[in-house]
Image 1: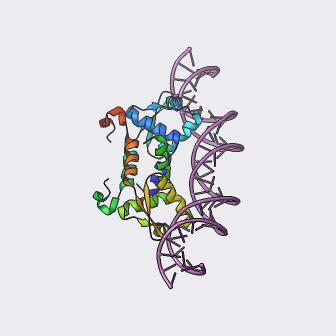
Image 2 (image 1 turned 135 degrees about the vertical axis):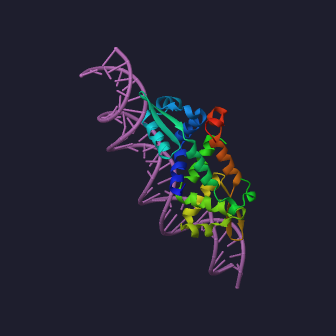
Image 3 (image 1 turned 45 degrees about the horizontal axis):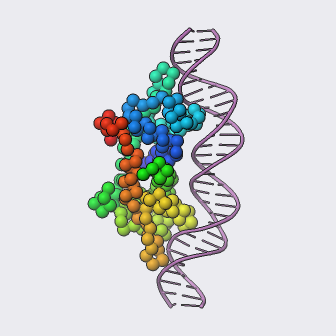
Length: 101
Length: 101
DNA sequence: GACATATTTCAAATATTCTTGAACTATTGA
DNA sequence: TCAATAGTTCAAGAATATTTGAAATATGTC
């Protein structure tokens, strides 16, 4: 992961509604939830939610697929994993015992 | 960690200069670097850097201490650890094998 | 005390992000 | 084909965040 991508992912998570959505999807796992159900649970307008889901998807943190009229969203674990790895990369000049990560 | 705190930490990292500073400090480890050295390395104005360092400190991601006229900054690993734990909390309804984290 | 150095604070200007509501697209079922 | 359902897109306005430069603070040195 490069810095630009990491900022897209971090800014995707650094917003109240999107963080709630992300955590909801992390909790749900691979089954995912349809957009409308997510909007109802966090109490957001459909268009606002669509904006937020697009940000999370662009960041590689969630993926989407259609089932009949509904669009399901689920967490994309690989994206999360890459982000966490990027943040802890090269910790303490390669001597992680120094900082305990 | 609660949601509010997580958003402060994530938005601290979701900015080009601050992410550069954070990664620089992760790399340096507990020794840290003085504010002026950080500003010089990323090419930011002192007042802008001060603003960013304050954001990172408020987020609990770095800590600061004075040595003569200089103020040193170093990564605060516990803050980073708490954030990463928060993001992966309750993954897949407690069945992490479902999503491979 | 006077000056130099390192950094922070503040207010204004600028830039970016978020919300809203209306219009639009895609899919389904009668 | 028509109407209903589920979501998305768009443009405008509102809210937030960032940069800038000047002034202020804190510490150390002569």
